[in-house]
Each structure stands twice: as structure tokens, then as C-alpha cells.
Image (cartoon, rainbow, N blue to C red; front, side, top):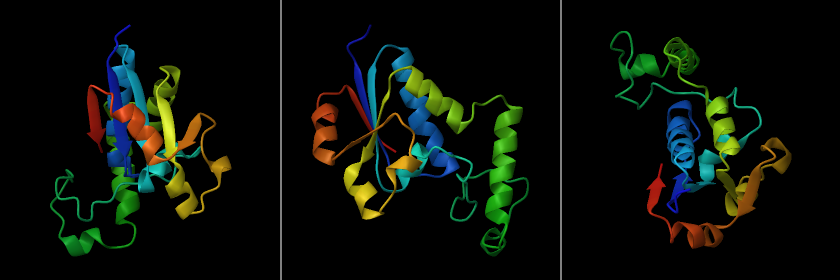
Length: 156
């Protein structure tokens, strides 16, 4: 077992921003690293029991590959977020990419610690029953105690 440690701060809760923390955490954990992910602000969405509402938006996401170039005005139309989400999920499934839930489950199996920012939970008045059972709750100071001793600390 490696004595390396990785700390990840996850701040976004969209489909495209949900993959990096889970991929990096599960990979590091599989290599024997001790890993913690600190979910804060919109990143808390990734700890919800139900991930089916996680979406991706083509709006203000110019690097998102689309089948045809779309003007910003078209990207803002109702239904475009749902269409982009459906297209991305289909592309990932066609390429054999694991779902967010599968990656999160892999992290849990590999003992990645999932920490919800207590201040953000309180700020947005989230109900803890909506989060997965493996969620731990802590403030920034507690997480920084771990992050300060890591080999790799990432902000996503």
C-alpha cells in the first residue's frame, strides 16, 4: 500500500464537472493512495442519492463538442440542456464510459472518503437524508488538516 495521499475539492455539480473528481479519486485509490473528496457549494449535488437530475449545459461551454455549430442564442433555448445531457450520456454509454453513479460507487468501494462541506449544507438548507449514507460532514478546517499533508491537492 502506498503512503501517498490525494485531496480533491469538488465545487461543481454538473455532468461534465462530476467525472473528474470521481475518476481521479478512484484511480488514486486503486493505486493505494489515501483519498478524500471535499464537496462544497454545487459539488454537493454529486453526493445526492439520486444522480438522475445531473445535467450538462451547452451554454457558456464553448469546448463542448456538438454535432453542428450552434449560436449562443440557440443554446439558450428551452430543452437544449436536456438534449445536450441526453447526447452526452449516450456518447459515454456508446464508448463504454462508466456512469457517475458507477464511478462514485467505485470510489466508495475503494474507501475514498466523501466529505460534505457542513457550512454549505447549512447555507442551502440541504436535508442530509438526500445524500448517500457514506457522506461524512465536516468544515473546511477539518478537511484542510488532511489536505495540508497530501502529495496531490486538486481543485475541480
